[in-house]
Every structure is written in structure tokens, then in C-alpha cells.
Image 1 (cartoon, rainbow over the protein chains, first blue to last red):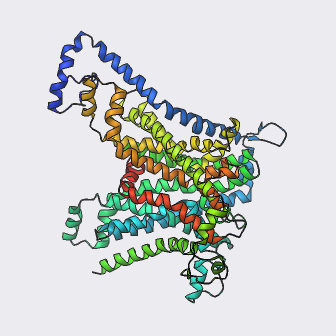
Image 2 (cartoon, chains in turn orange, brown; image 1 turned 90 degrees about the vertical axis):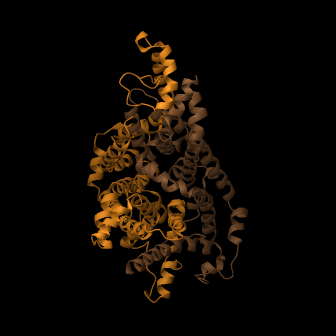
Length: 333
Length: 272
């Protein structure tokens, strides 16, 4: 095996097409491996040095702007800082105070409702979208492109638009429902605690379902047509084909999309901040908006970080799932 | 047959759901202040006016926000592409100890939500005394862009046959030369897709820009827009005009990029 700089001992599996090999045998023949391939070893070292050099910027970025801030923040969550005094270590006091705090319990519960409500709805609508667009029809590309627009435009625009859609007196929802004779007086969408939660979930679903739908659709289209043909020969109904053929084939993508979305929704900020600022009361406050209130607005940094950290175990667990899944798929070259 | 009807019904409902808020943005932006305030001409702007758009350019700092957003998005995209491409090449083509673990680390950082990172990052920026500048955003946006670029480009680099590089190496090229002359040109579509994704992500970013920037003149577009709403009152006509204009660049990018989007999504976020 004369694979030059690529093939070290025990690396034969990275063989080349025969034609290429012919060319590659020459340098190796001039420097037989048994005679001590000095240049070969040097190049392995060079390869390693270059490898480390090229990942250094990424590594620096991760260490300086992700790992260090994060570890520092964990420390911060164990301290208390009063104005005029240096921060001092208080152990788990912040965590205990939050655990006892009725307001924080509402925040934690809201985060769960917001996340589960959004994701379940997005799963259903996304699946409907994928199935509806699955059979190739004319204009399909155009349709798909249009349906993906909410995923493209800035979240701030979406949140502001929904706030305006749901405006008490002049919003399209209330005016439209009134004109259709469905409601008499305007509904106070963002002023009623339950409806406010429903409203932020609606905006989140509107933004997120196209991503679900397009991902599912892309996965479904890799399913061989033979499977469907065989199923329909066996007399399977459309519903059975979806349930028995489509869904099992795309369950990996469904799992990944759901996990990714859960990670990001649980710590979402933009939609809630812009639509309700967490209100009315604390009815739509979730982890990130509450941390913002504690940290940025009240300067209670230790408490703010502790509030964020309460979501960490779940986030970390989900990240482990995703990494194990995706890293397994990657060829271990 | 009923399946067909059902399918088109579903498509129709989805189109309606997506279209209504988009239509509401455009139609509101074309109404006069009076039409909005008095709830006249709800469903169509009649007569329509462009005064909201001219107001934005003449009476607000819209152009400044636009400039700030553009500078930040372009600079952070360039930076992220350079860092990410180097990292992706090392992780796909060069053998060194710890490579696989590092690949996992990049993926982990890609997944850490900004909602969890904004306070830690802000505290660190305060420590080093580097807040309230466009530079702050340009160096912090890569925290979410670089892992994304790296992960996306790893897929592209893997699809380039090693044999091309090996042939060049045998002919006496150095590793850096093969990267520069062979791999990067062949990965140009990937670089373009990654760059446009980065641009979109930076352009739309709100949380970091809201917190790291205090100076009114340094606001980016999304933060500027959010400041339009004062307590419970807003000039919805101007605001929706600004919303439409803020969405325009990313929608144009997206129309061009459409083909790559789905592939990029699955390559970047789903498939690895």
C-alpha cells in the first residue's frame, strides 16, 4: 500500500481507485517504507500542527466567549452582590430563594407550558404540511417557498406583527371576528393571562411550523416510492401508509427537529419580550425573560443566573441526546 | 379522490395562515395614520399612501439602524466564515489527537441557546470593558455563527473527493495550498450558502443587540423596531413599514437561496 501522505500503518482502508494508485506508487517506491520514511513522519507531524493551528480560532472563540462566561456565570449564581460591596459567596441561597418564590414557580411552569404547547402544535401542523405537500404537484416549489417565509423573516417583525394583529381595538383578529359576527366586544388577547399565553404560543407556532414541515417533507421524500407501491398493493389505506410507512421512516428527523426546537423554545426570549414583556402579571414570563428582569433590570445577577440555571439540567440532557445522535451519524473517518 | 380534496384543503388553510399576518404588515404600512386610528379601511388600504415609508427615512433613525445592521451582519459573517472554514477543514481532513471530541464540542456550542448565554456573555463583556459598540456584536455573533458554519462546511468538505487533494500533494503542493486552491473553490457553493445563512441570522438577531448596546445611535434594526412601541402605544403604520423593509433583505436572500435552504437545513441542523 503506497498511499503517500495519507496512509499510515493500519490505514489501508482509505484505499484509492486503481488509476490513482498507479501515480501514487512512484514517490513511495523511491522512499521504501522499510527504509525509514522520514518525510512521511515529518508530514504527519506537519498535518497535526496544521490541524491544531486551523482549529485554534474556533477553540479560542469557544473558550473565551462561551466556556469562560458560562463557568463564570455558574460561579455568579452562587454569589450575592449588594450595591457598594463586593460579591460574596452564598452557596445555594439564590437557588433556594427561587425555589421558594411563588413568582419563579409560575415562571418555570410557564416555560413548560410555552414549550410543550408550541412544540406539540408545531409537530401536528408541520406533519400536516409535509403530508399535504408530499405528492408532487405543480407549483409545489413555489408553495413550499411561500410557506417557509415565516421562518425567514426576523422574529422581532413576527412578534410585533402579532402584537398588532391582536390589538384590542384595531387588531385584525378582533375586527375580523367582530365583522363575522363571532364576537361582540373585543377580546383582550394580551391582557387576559390565559389568552396571553395562547397568543405568544400562536406567534411561536406561526414562526416555527414551516421549519418542522419542510424538514419532515425533505425526510419523507427520501422514502423510496416502492415502499408506498408495495403498501398500496397490499391494500393499505392512505392513513395506514402514513402511519406505517412514512412515519417510521422519518422518525429520526422528527426526533432531532423536536429536540432542537425544545432546546431553543425553553430558553426563548424574543417573542414573549416583545409581545407581553412577561405580563400580564407574570402570566407569560419564561426563563429568559425572567432572567432579563432579574439581571438586566434589577441588577440581581446572582439570582438571574440561578433562574437560568434551573433550565440547564433539561437543556443539557437534550443536548446530550442530539450530540449522541448526530455524532453517531457522522462517519468516523 | 377525497384524499386529493383533503390535501388541497390543508394546503389552502396553511397558505391562509401564513398569508394573513404578511398581508397585515403590508396593508398596514400603506394606510394613513387616520385610517389606522379611526379603524377605517380595515382590510384594504384605500386610498393607499407611502407616507409611512417616507416618514421612516426622513423623520427617524431608520437609515442609521439599517447601516448598523448591515455593518454588523457583513462583518460578523466574514469573520465567522474565515474561522469556520479553517475549523471545518481541520476537522474533516487533518488527523490530530482530540479531533472527534472537538467536533462534538462544536456541535454542543451550536446547540447552547442564546437565552441561556446572554447574561454570562454580558458579564464577561463588562469585565473586559467591551460593551456598547458594533464591534461587540461583531465578535459575539460568531459564538452562534461559527459552530453553525463549521458544522455546515464539514458536510461540504466531506463531499469533495480526497483524491483531488492527494494528487496535488503528490505534485508537491502544501496542505494550505490544497485548501486554498482546491478545497475552497470546490466548496464555493457551500461557502455562499453558509455566508448567506450567517447574514440572515445576524440580521435577525435581537437579544444580544438589545442588551450589549446602550447607545441609541448604535442600535441595529430589530432593536430599533422594538423601540417603536412606547408603553402600550405604537405608530403602527410606520412600524409595519419598517417591518416590511427590515424583512426585505432576508426575503431576497432567501428567494435566491431557496434551493440550498432545505439542503442546508438538513446538512447543517439535521444531518450534520
